[in-house]
Image 1 (tube, rainbow over the protein chains, first blue to last red):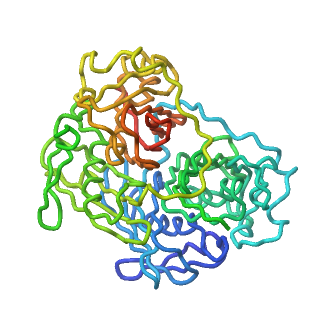
Image 2: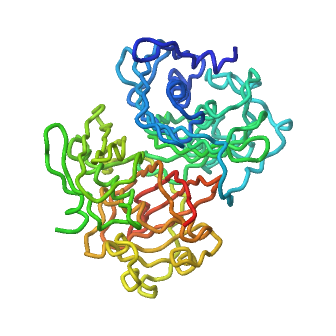
Image 3: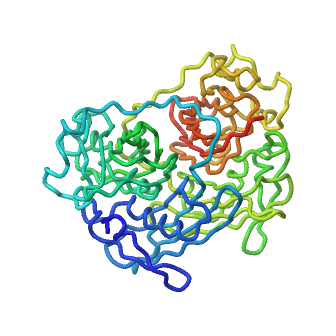
Amino acid sequence: MFEFDADTALTEDGDGRQGTITDRWNVGPIPNGGYIAAIGATAMAAVATHPDPMSVTTHFLRPAVPGPVRVVASSVRTGRTHTWLQASLTQESGDIARMMAIFGDLDGSGPTSITGVVPELPDPALLVSSQSLPKVFSLARRFDMRLDPATAGGAMGSPTGTPEMAGWMRFADGREPDTRALVLCADAMPPPVLNLIPAAWVPTLEYTVHVRARPAPGWLRGRFRTRFLMEGLLEEDGELWDSEDRLVALSRQFARVRAG
Amino acid sequence: MFEFDADTALTEDGDGRQGTITDRWNVGPIPNGGYIAAIGATAMAAVATHPDPMSVTTHFLRPAVPGPVRVVASSVRTGRTHTWLQASLTQESGDIARMMAIFGDLDGSGPTSITGVVPELPDPALLVSSQSLPKVFSLARRFDMRLDPATAGGAMGSPTGTPEMAGWMRFADGREPDTRALVLCADAMPPPVLNLIPAAWVPTLEYTVHVRARPAPGWLRGRFRTRFLMEGLLEEDGELWDSEDRLVALSRQFARVRAG
């Protein structure tokens, strides 16, 4: 079993589901927000009539801690083309997250017009793998990331001054991406604000990811930007593209920044 | 009393609040989604400990209709710096919207770094007011909008081919903008996808607005883009700037497009 599937597995427990938040997806001592959202999306997928998480919003109420988590997910409405869902995630400390999601079927058809462009990145074979760097965060051990040298400074304590982060990513254990994994992947790269403020801690308040296509196997490419850091609050906008040059996820989060 | 305040007013009713969705903010026969979200935000503001809606997410479950609406809003958690809230809006047809919001205080201070740029627009005095055009939608009568001629074609049945919409806006009755009104304003301009597909109907599935600053009195400037129309699904990203060149709201919505 792959790490992501093992660490998001849930078992039925009365009107909810029980799981374990492991310490394998941490940033510092705190489990990554995308990982928490993926656990909630897993519970919602189990009750959704439609297969794909299309829009997933998570509010983070308290820092999660490694340990047991209870997830209660329910359908709010099931229509012909979409299921609307809600979920709450609770640990011993109280509610850690509330979520709303819309599931649908990404096999649909309709008008298509794309003006966004795939990130231009050096070939991943030419870049240093995150697997060869000192592993300060357990999250970094779960992925093989190849950050664009033009943006990687912030992740290594040398801010570039430009709040962008881009690179290739895949699970280190060979698991291929799917729509559920994108909920994690769109929050897994180092925050671009690290290129402005070194060693900052960036707790997310709200995180919304739109899954736009089922990813092809292979590398994902990500590009993340923060255009408006205002009075310690920021948005982080992300795109994930698959190995066939297709946009597969758009993400935005609203976060605070605290000096490290 | 200004139109926006009259049409979002709520009265207490047991564990919820009662109001009226008027037909004054319609697009076609359907009340605008931003207007529905503003009604929900009004109910949440009444129970929030903190003054400003910072992140507001709305899921649209069914089309709203002009008529009575019941809103149940509650605090999920109140912390030192933020209140997390949820709300449901119900009409005779059933639940029309579910919402989650984070309120806070935009008077805070902290690091600031901005790379986004204010939209460049012709002077509003040089542009045609929406007030002088035939009023097919009641929403258009509530605002004085001055659309950038480079993007306005889609709103008049002549798509430009570029999915952007930009312009000046203010309430037609002179009401000044505030953080609550921004929840409406960030969804009030014609959708940029009209510059690709004329006369499309664009029902919103999910709408998230980040309110980033309290707006100064006067004109708002908006710029909205759709970069990824894929199989009939699209995102719409927006920015609202105030008369002092400050970004006051970032918005993103996830919507379907249907040929008109």
